[in-house]
Length: 236
Image 1 (cartoon, rainbow, N blue to C red):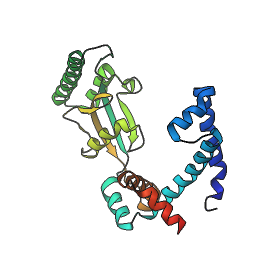
Image 2: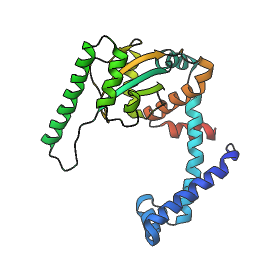
Image 3: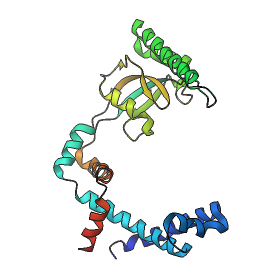
């Protein structure tokens, strides 16, 4: 009743999940469902998927209700930053799955040393922007940005994949026209970054919904009992 506007979405979720499972398991689907969930039929499991979709909405709302104004203000002050104009040079270790651990480690060291050499070149330069762009064109293994001098444009948390969050962390600590003097390690490899500008951060009212959503997600991750609490609250 509370989520009557979401019933169609719940139905679509349940049906699409069952359809995907049917494609993977065929005639053995019901056996798989019973073994992993205890439900004795496909229809019973589909009903549970339908219900869980709606329950998840209730948990989400409950978690958001637990977020306080003080938490919102602190998150805004500590975590929200203005978009940063950023360029990077990426050096990726040339490892393959069939390499031994020692061979992979050697390739990691090779990539890290290459990044250090690029930083040394930047330290010698009197024109950081042009030198950085040239080094990016000649060395960066990010094919999408190397030709444009490594430019990522204006970026922020959630602008790019989570692989780049470490870069945003590092960029937030730099001043405009400063570059990182140590290589930044991500799952993609070793990065050298150059920060060239930063915009004013958004007003609190413009990002409040996003902050509440992020804080609610943190509460769900930190409190393993929150789903039970949400259902108890809904029942009351």
